[in-house]
Length: 319
Image (tube, rainbow, N blue to C red; front, side, top):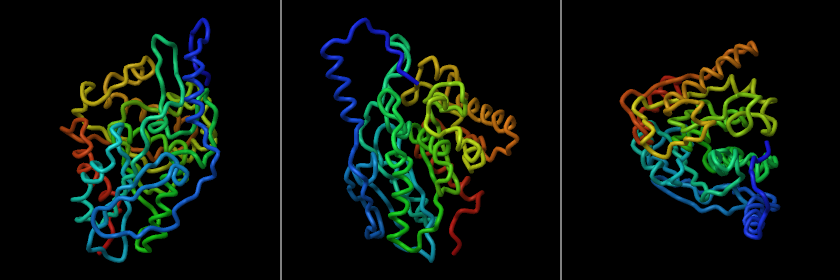
């Protein structure tokens, strides 16, 4: 996919801006990953370097003070507010009750990856919610630089650091974090989650080979090769029935409006589209569409409602 920017001439400031954006998208350093950390009880935070876990500035986590022989890690993805600590706090009551190790990576400030659409109806896309799979001018980035890969590497860090951490994790994201989660399922279907919950996403990347990324998969790296596996992973599209467009930032670009006029409508459109694709491919669809009755655009309320989804899957550690 190439940006559709209608300009008559490139002036000096255009060159400067593009140069800055290109410079910000380049990362020539090979990543180095934290081998182990001291996983302490209670609420904790540690800083990371830019070359360590792509896109992650710091990591908030909470470990119950009393644990058994196993810990279920719940990876929590924040929204556009970059408030990882707040998201962690919303899960702490359930961590104590269910012996969850809750990990909330906090990603860096928004960084532009490109301009999508025309000047009148388009806009800039950003790295976090779309996973950093492409750079400016839609150049494919190495998989090691994808933010989805950082989540897996972070999981490895905690597994190496505490032998009680189970070998699969729960993935939860709300709003922009929900966008992150459903795209991680599409692009990294072999990730080690045994449940992925995409809550109240504002808009979606459809499993559509005809529509340009990020609204479809055309032009995205290796997406078609992985789609069959993606459709058979345990993804729940989780929608608050009272989530209206006036709550939170709501995208109104033409491509997004085609998906629906509210987040619940867009989530159902995404799920229905996936059902058709799975049927055409002769595959069972392992995704589910679930509603949280009476809940709006609230990550705290959706976190509490998600506990039932985790329980239904039998993912609470045994005593």
